Amino acid sequence: MKTILVTGSGGFIGQNLCNALRRHGEFEVLEFTRRHEAETLPSLARRADVVFHLAGVNRSMDEKEFTTGNVDLTRRLCESLAATGRRTPLVFSSSVQAELDNLYGCSKRQAEDAVLRYHNQEGAPVYIYRFPNVFGKWSRPNYNTVVATFCHNISRGLPVQVSSR
Image 1: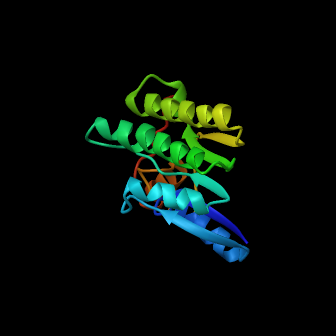
Image 2: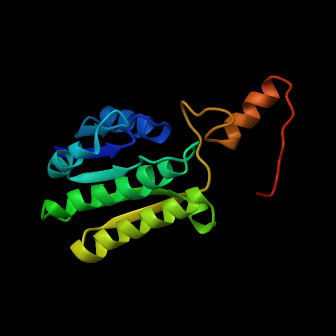
């Protein structure tokens, strides 16, 4: 049985992934949420055969949280995986915002760099996905998907706004 670590397992994509993996029935799923301390990552990394790194900060009132929640957490995870001496595959959820020069985008680009360093130094397979938009069960309007926002607004007779940014 493969053991899969999902960081950000309490978030929108993480919840959906964990549920799908458990329905499959052939995986042990380890969860890491914002309730966990980063100090637990080394023990989780030792047990994982594959890691889906979905944790991160996409909105914050404190600019430092983009660094701690995206860059520092990703570096800590990569260091924990490297310390195992195994070449654990890592799937990283990034964003198309990584191409932009804003705090969130810069933090996702730096996190991508940490993932690529892990690959280059350890030879582990890594996969970086820059999601442009997401939709699915538990998506929230005005937060993580334009589709949920449009459905919410249209069903309530609220205006729908389309912009180029």
